[in-house]
Length: 126
Image (cartoon, rainbow, N blue to C red; front, side, top):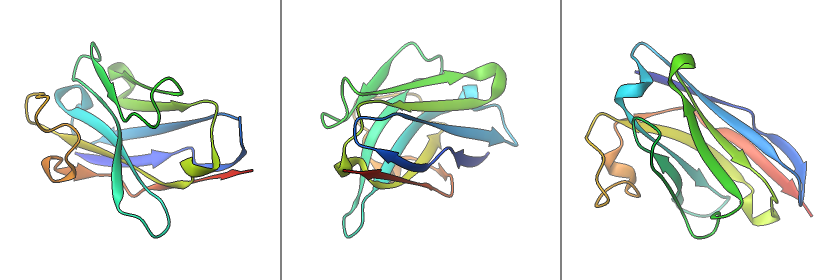
């Protein structure tokens, strides 16, 4: 499966953006999908994950209550709605997917994801 992330841009603190991760080549509904981000000078970190059906979602503590991951399997797309954004949310955001059955033991671990999009830059100004 090939993944492409869209929707990054510049937003003021307190504002919102919605990122999209569009899949091609395979049906995205067969993949657990996650979002990760890498801020300047920092390691890439987990942001959110969603199970194949979309029935369960998981978030990093830093975004819980502000970000929402969702999926539209008919459109082969996973979304990340980002609200109440903060300057510390500034990063390149990547979507990732794995064919593995979902497990609480791995969903935050980058190496467990087999497919990655190219990243989209999000900048939050103060």
